[in-house]
Length: 203
Image (spheres, rainbow, N blue to C red):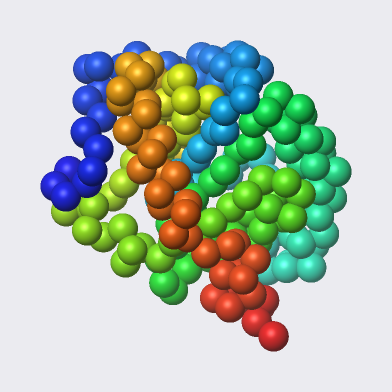
């Protein structure tokens, strides 16, 4: 990518993981993470949710039920965040948002607000803020765990997850970790963003 302050991710330099392999590998590295934060960068404006009652309720127009189901997850989310903190780690997320938000993004931003309220810091950046990095295409969907492993999450044409490419080269992981951390530092807290920009959550 032109004008991006990190090296492009070459799939040939990583390891392809099928979806189940990615899930198992993620869990293993997350468990081993100590005294280092983890990061997630989300750029796509729609993901196919295969098992989310809250999304299903939102999709059929039942906002109250969708919100109730999101809030029902609060305790579990708090426990996840507390467990990470006990290992000296915080999972931080950057969400890129286009305007106007897709129906899916309106729901996901609400979901991320609940995560933030229960211990997972989330910041939002407008798509215009990263456009200078995207002359050759959108930023990738990334997860970095403990500064040791980077996953580029891959999706089908229908936006369902299909696996990930795992990168472990220290220089590659560190460059992208710093890039996401810089985006996070300039982003807006999810709560104020949702209250201002998401339909149904304004004053």
